[in-house]
Image 1 (cartoon, rainbow, N blue to C red):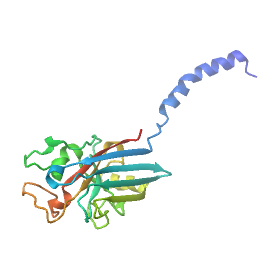
Image 2 (cartoon, one colour; image 1 turned 45 degrees about the vertical axis):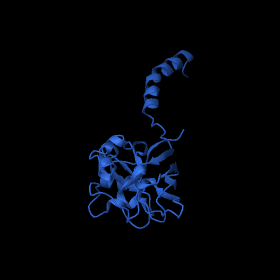
Image 3 (cartoon, rainbow, N blue to C red; image 1 turned 90 degrees about the vertical axis):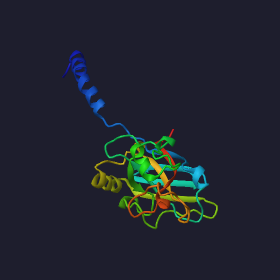
Image 4 (tube, rainbow, N blue to C red; image 1 turned 135 degrees about the horizontal axis):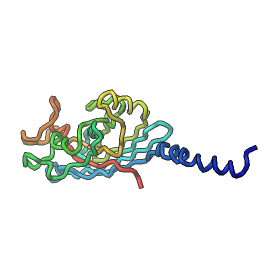
Length: 212
């Protein structure tokens, strides 16, 4: 039988190990994130796209809800989160991003501060397909809604395979893209190879942050 004094000594000696175990325990990650989407290029395109993107993680599933208004109407809009593979924090562009001074912030001009296109908010986000015909379409009033549930594990695997990084929502930004394909843009507005600038020009952006 261990005496009280010996029991106290054993408990005291175990304290450093207990502290080490506590410090090594994983920190519970946030499970709710929001991006408040603000207009980009509004003075040039004539509409002020805005809205919210809401992300909830529950039971291994990422539930994404995006509500938008002020969009160019009656057309599909690409929407993605952008970020960096090296862990750098992505931010939305300011007017300073217009490096060629043509009055527009095009997709390529967003890359130094916002990174590359990563996850699409379409019918199959984990496919990481940048452009397809399953993105939401704005109605005649410029309103669009998107809702999707996707496996976190599938997203993590896809991101690691393509970018060698994880989901890391709080390091990403959401972009909404696109104006009417008949809209005139100067040749200085650049896009990805094979994609018209009207399709990829950013019209709204929001930083993803943990919900408060």
